[in-house]
Length: 130
Length: 92
Image (cartoon, each protein chain N blue to C red):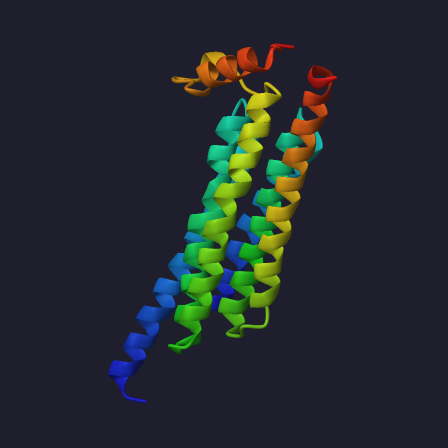
């Protein structure tokens, strides 16, 4: 093995090591956010980090370590699948959290759903303020 | 270099999993617990990815995808369940 290829190998190893450590730190950031943030909405903000960016960095590390081209489509499919499912579940959880009043209204800077909810409650003849 | 990376990521992911488990145990509402268990699944997926990267194999990829399916189905189901249970007194 010539020295040039060895240095390329070392660079790829270093990049994937950095990706792995940063991806693990995303999980730690999410855990700290879960413990420190005051309500459900801000915790959801913290929880997205390892699910999207952390998984991206770690799948990139896997692809760099395997050093073949055919794994990249598989890893991209895994990541896109995560990208498709995470917003849907976050939307459902956020909607349920809004409906069951798991939020601190004084922490919101804008509440665009309030008027819609009030209008829908008026049309259906019941109020949702229990 | 790889053993050092493995040690660092193991410590970091263990701390993260501990934080998520504390939030599952303490979380004031059901939705907080669902969110924290989603994060715990993401941490598990991160551990599987790091295992694949360090040992240079792809055996865990299907497990990774199925873990994300389980997290998706679980959180959507629980979110619907919570919304339905709180809405019922209004509709009756």
